[in-house]
Each structure stands twice: as structure tokens, then as C-alpha cells.
Length: 125
Image (cartoon, rainbow, N blue to C red; front, side, top):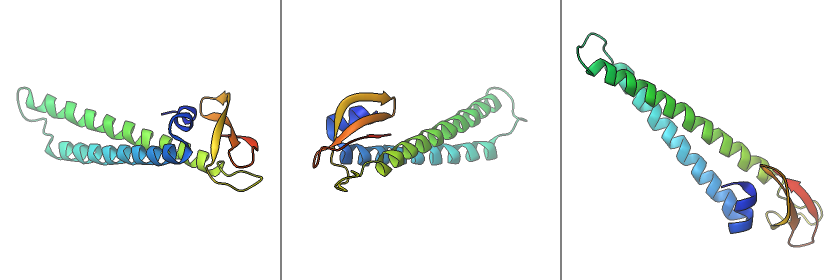
């Protein structure tokens, strides 16, 4: 879920929590992919005949791709959540996470927000 859509639909705190949970699910997928990769490499033997060596090569390549993609997604989500969290404190009243969108989309992962407590506006993302 994108930052602007998440803040609008469920609020900043819940968006942040769900982004971290989803990111850590990607980390778990990366670890499972790495385990599958190492198990496949250990089992791989090109001396066999028929489809078995080809199947293990496909398994190893697929597991490696899964692990790399999942690790990429984990890091991307972690960076997005960290950037948003660093900039979600109001500069005037120091309220954390009491945000509402002003309706201005600055960039894909940057939005203009307003503090619900004092009305101060700034950009996060």
C-alpha cells in the first residue's frame, strides 16, 4: 500500500505497523528462499540422467530469484517506513503521527500532510 493511500484509508500509525509487518513477512520469505537455495545446491548433482538434474537447476535458480526479490522488497519497505516515521513528527507541537493528507501528491512516496493537532503543514516521504 502506498504512503498516501495508507494514511488516507487507515491512518499513519496503522499504515506504519502494517508496512513493517509486511516487510518482515518478505524477510521471512527471503530466508525460506535462501534455505531452499542452499538445500537445492547441496542436493544438485549433474551426474544423474533424465529430468532430475534439470529440475534441481530450475529449483536452485527459482529459489535464488525468490530470495533476491524478497530481500529487495524487505529493504524497500523498511526504508519507506523509516523515512515516513522520521518525518511524521510535527515541527510546531511535536505530535507524532497525528497526520491528515492535504490532498497534494508531491511524488510517488512523498505527500503533503497537516497536523491534526495544530494545523501545521509539511511533506513526508
